[in-house]
Length: 251
Image 1 (tube, rainbow, N blue to C red):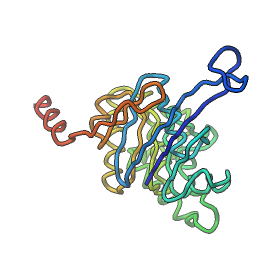
Image 2 (image 1 turned 180 degrees about the vertical axis):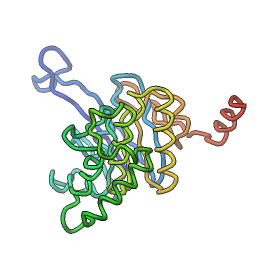
Image 3 (image 1 turned 90 degrees about the vertical axis):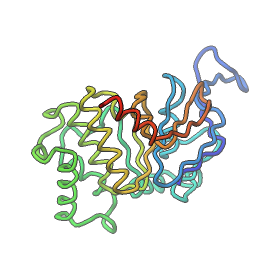
């Protein structure tokens, strides 16, 4: 589903820093190799500045690496121009942003409709079908009564739920989430977390999640530990054992 090879990202710096050919660079990711299978839940974990969000953006095709390449859903992103990459994202990818990125002048319903409109006339459902789908998604995230509200009229948790509904609108093959519970209180964060995993189980959508939330990470299939722009280790999670421990504590 996703294959990253020798993935490296450097940014040119002003002032002092490692120099190459007279220019200074900051290496954020360094020779990262990673394969993620269809239907897998992978969490990217690491301290601030370890390259987590940078890696997520490269895997999703939002940015281009300095070196290396990414294969996503059978397509090598390095060989695609920006229009082709945008079309691939619209058709196959969902993205949940930490800061929501809802369009403030659109209602919750209209925000969820945006990915469907981006599919273009050949693939987009008819307006009535698209609205039915969007309303159904908002109902599934508990916002059936808030479809006509604007982002400013919604709480942070509600805005994140709209973001999740929007991310699933085009039925993505893979969904990327950047700190999906980072801006939420504990109770709302747990609800959003449960929703993500429920949708993954129901649809088989691959989840790639950046988080600092250790409890969330224990529900993944694998945890990729990043440190200093490199993969420190990849941990396979015994989800059955963790679920048993959680049940014992709950009892």
